Image (tube, rainbow, N blue to C red; front, side, top):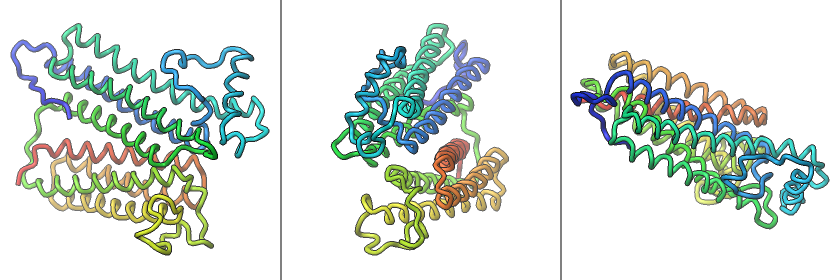
Length: 351
């Protein structure tokens, strides 16, 4: 997490309220862009678009094909992989463009985030609007953002293996959680720049521990969700076979944890129920303890989002609508951010 900051240093231009608001707004924008990036990534995954671009070219890949010859060359590369041969054989160029553009936008958005991080960072550092102790941390986040692009290519490349029509789920999970680390780091930094001094909240240390436990349980449920997404589990719901009905499959819990569709879906559902109960417990305990308004509001928001998350997961599975699955993922990230906000507001918790 970022180094602590002290806005009370005499003569500190960077520590002025105006500059802190400016830097915090910039970082909140970055967090929002990461959230949108996750949504675009979820859409490309669910539509099978992620394998449509066969090269990782961080610089020249900024431009899409600009001529008929360029389009034909990109399409010809795609026709060499198993996804085309096994799933899309006979697809024409128009059909290829439909799966090309979501992946292209996904990669372009990632490049745009790099620009939005680096250019203001240089400008703020040059004009003294950002505290010097934060600069190395933000440079590190920029480097990690570039590494995230490399992890994304590591994930995509697994879809080019022989007889493979999708990326490997564990690589998908790695890519997603690397993004969540970046989101959490940027959001926590923004909140700390905005409110550098923790407010003292007596008798809330137990509540902070409960919130941390709920946060970790949510991460586990989201981990399970990446595997459900990786195997396209939303389309596998089949009550006749006991898949997705909430019943433990044969051999559970010692077999098929990362390979059997029914087990993967059940594990995610079980973790989701546990995380939901934990988050609702945090909300109820916050209200019972009469926590201060900022803590209470964050806990209420978390309670509302987790109920919505549960309903979205149920609706996505029952309807088999991929778009609902994407909304389910984006709401999970909002919920994660909300719990992070609650933890930040509980920094000053005391026994």
